[in-house]
Image 1: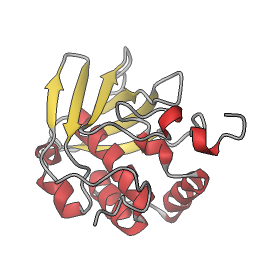
Image 2: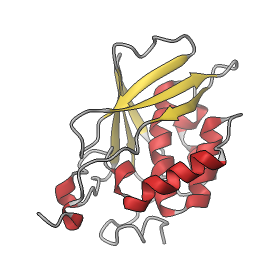
Image 3: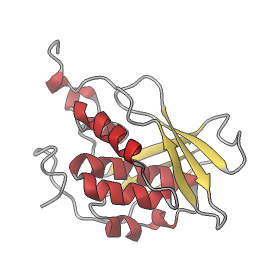
Image 4: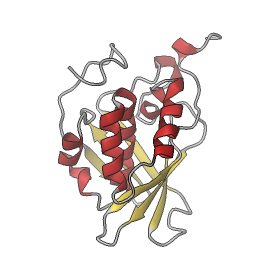
Length: 188
């Protein structure tokens, strides 16, 4: 049984397998046959080397999806992605507040997830991350953008490079409001 089963019963769990990525100069697409359900599964993915900021951004979206299903496991994943700067009590309070309105927001970043299908992504889970014109404005930081199926503009995520070359999560603006899922929209 998958930890995501309680979120949507119509989305059967897939077996866990490594993600694949297509690398482009200003964007990368990652494809996951299944979302990781434990920190160990996440750390076993090829992206977990965290040598590229796009990898860390993709795993952050996965961790936020897990947080929607299980806050403890999601917190473990986010803390690992943040490295020496774990989530503070304020960060956790913010995350809990963002998920009060539903669990659909992090899933909206995967291909096929739209308000009409209640943000149910297609499988494999594909995620495209783009570097905008100011991605490298600050040395040691990378500002990337991810398009949501429920918003007109891409959302921002900021990564910071550690001295050993790994890229860690610095800040994310992925949990802002998006269009309501059709099932929750009284006007639909």
